[in-house]
Amino acid sequence: MDLSTEDMKNYLRVDFSEDDSLITALIVQAKQLVMHVLRVDTEAEIADEGCARIAIMYAVAYLYEHREEADYHDLALTLRSILFGSRKAGF
Image (cartoon, rainbow, N blue to C red; front, side):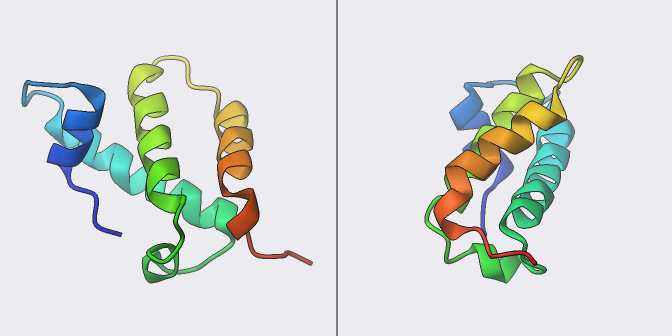
């Protein structure tokens, strides 16, 4: 899944470069969270999921805006809701 720092800065409406490394790190973390929720092992597996990009962007925005007090349980529940139709069965 190709999501650049510039794409996220545009989505977040950030027009300065001081947070570039933070946003890049949050993209990596958000991809890992989405992979975990979808129960997949590789980034290539999320490339075909229609809602994965939206979920990643949502997660980055949430983590960026709530970097001091992020509620990871709430974030995970929201990501599960977004990705419900694509989530692999787990037994």
